[in-house]
Image (cartoon, rainbow, N blue to C red; front, side, top):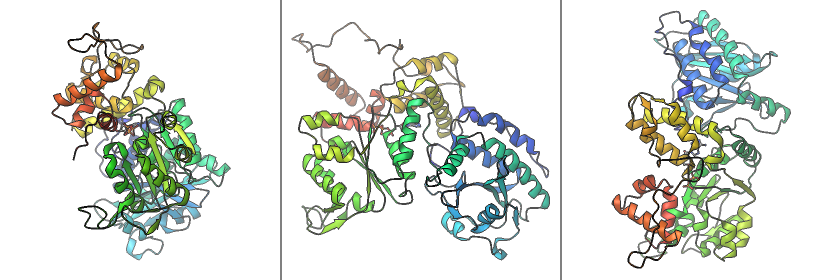
Length: 523
Ligand SMILES: Nc1ncnc2c1ncn2[C@@H]1O[C@H](COP(=O)(O)OP(=O)(O)OP(=O)(O)O)[C@@H](O)[C@H]1O
């Protein structure tokens, strides 16, 4: 699971498990689940908790939930202890889970070594060693099999007993009821109606259920399975990279690399090298041939962040990649062919840049085949802010090994009213700081937000106008911004990460602005 999924948001905090001896009480595990599903916030976190609970109840080392992708006749794993991208797929009929999905009967495998149905490739893929396994089918209310519930390696040695089989069957009935009210099940049903749509979309690291976000999810579901170039637009910190990854992992290239190139973080002179690599001797100090990101991503996706920063000559080279899927390394003559999908992001007005001659028009039209405009956080409504807040509270508490604090009603209201110019990144930083500073409860005073925040645009703090020292001349906004940024950077001794936190803008945005001011990049 991704980094966001290894923690359970506040709302999912389950009552502590009773210590279980030989006969665990299933109701203790599953009763709380029904109530949780209706409030599904982060499905991955929910499934992870569910599977952890089942593993503990069954005295197993781990549990896996397999779901059936009817379009492909495959099972795909959810909530296994695996990184998100390494989702495993097996054909129906393949391995123990595949057998259970095909025949609809439980399998109790006492020893992996003597079991012909055991599919050892999965262990090879995960590096895990399976000894014993118990798997039962998941059926919906119509009796149709839509998945398999599986537990591995009974604790304390020995095989799973007949009682265990009964117990897991009972659990499967309850899990099935619970899952049928989740979006995951609805997705499986939709896939049945449209047999060519792949299922198993991963949006669960992305938190948010508001309407503007649902529009984006739908567009990604349509665009991801194709090879279309996607342009993500949106303010800094609103999740462009997260959505770019969603495009990748929901498409056919999901098992291939996702390679990011951040144009704002690189000096213009290095961007070409970074993307296309160079030949030995291409420039002083180029003593080896170095492949670029396009070669590294072959078969996968290249995510070009802050594409508006791309120098004009490199724009031409990128256009050729988009048109003909080929390029030459810097200093090279050999034409290299690549098979990559391109996803780009920007928080600049590319149309304006085209009008100003700073961005090639032909490239602009090539990259915006599918254009996704991500909503700023303030347009996503209070409920999304609340969901994200719960998630970040739990994640920060875990990261800093602190107890999960409560959030006061007044503090929550304040968070909902604030305008979030730095979007989700700003909220994330704000919550992390509050979690570290509070004692048990996050109160309004712990939130590092400007005072007097209201639904209206942030008020000017003091009545004074910013003027040119000495002359009293009023300064243009850009100049005020520049001076403020440089002052902040100075106060944190040039540390850009710290400065971007204080300024509540993305590090990329800061890098871009500094570049505009003619300040060279670090390192
Ligand atoms: N919907 C979301 N759910 C959970 N986390 C989110 C969401 N959106 C953004 N984040 C988190 O907010 C932070 C900023 O997101 P990200 O880097 O994707 O933004 P960005 O738009 O690419 O920013 P920039 O333009 O400054 O590069 C990351 O830590 C990301 O994980």
